[in-house]
Amino acid sequence: MRRVGKMSRGVRLAIAATGMVAITGCAPPVSDQLETVTSAITVGTIGDLWTALNNYPNGVIDLNNDIYANGYAWHLGYFAGTLNGHDHTIFNLTTSDTIGQSAAMFVYAEFATIKNLRLVNVTVTGTYASAGLIGGSYDCAVDNVAVEGTASAPNYVGGIIGSMGGGTLSRSYFKGTVTGGAYGAGGLVGVTGSTETTGTAKITSSYAQALNQTSTLVAGSTAAGIHPAGGIVGGGGGMELKDVYAIGAVKGRGSSGGLIGRPTCDDPRPFVLYRGIYRGNVTDSNLAEPGGWAGTLGKATDVTCSSRASMLFFNRDLDTSQNYLTLGNVSQRSSTGAELTAPTAPGVANGGIFCPPSMTLVPCGDDPMTSPPWDYGAANQNNVLMNMPGPNNQIR
Image (cartoon, rainbow, N blue to C red; front, side, top):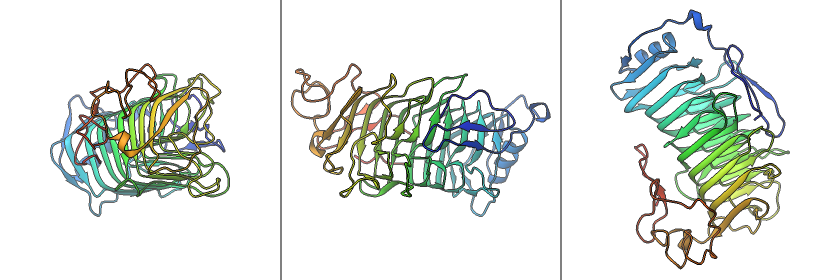
């Protein structure tokens, strides 16, 4: 994704993934036509939630109850306010685009804050930037959000955000399956890019997981060409990922990776990937042998800019191909399942994914995994992240 300026009426995010195209989404309303409120609006039903978000897109909306969306025809085009779920859950939200555009709980959001919210059994079907929470996100702050369900779109699709221009995604997770995304399919985010306002798209202390390590997390496009697919991010530039992990199979073509499918240098800001773990199997349909590619980054990853990727690990018991990036400023290690589950704390001399005193067994870098945010667990347990939203139980 190229760097983009502030978007107002026409939602345009220029994507620097293969086959760069422009996404035109739902146009937000003119600001001087919006009703304003001076205090938070509290809602507890699906109808009241839609009414509040639709009538006060710049307002502060608080949930005071779990909400059931069964049978509700949800379609919300624009949001620029604050939604605080107060740890409540929206169940069974289903939405799809009707005009060949984006789909999500919020089709498009800019400068919005969405926090402390759970979406369970969400089903989203769109065309362009589609996802469980936000289709097109511009300089938004998403924190402590859980999304469980399915998201599909033929062009760009993510578990939580379809296209992410700047902004932050923190302490959040997606559980389920992401399908499609010829230009970018990711367990959390389809495509990323920087903006003039907040800079890089930052994803921290977050994860994506399938039902288990062998189930499909991302079923990206396998048509002819290069179709980025990644367990966290499908592709793009101007991204910064720290303390992330993905569980489940990732399938794509030409650029498939356990964490990022195809980070590029087609953005004024380079990509950064620190402290990541992948537990699953990458399949690239362009390559021979079952799988044909392994590791946290896809084959077509662009490392020609001042990007940096270090402290990356993947489970070679699950991802058995011998092909993965070991060049330039990419520092990753294929580890056995036993190594990934022991020791339980850094500084132990033998095995594990932490830096031993000799600093010879793993690519330690200068920014090792720490607790918090990582929970090392007991012996024979994988690392997971602390302080994450429910209701999901992380696979150990």
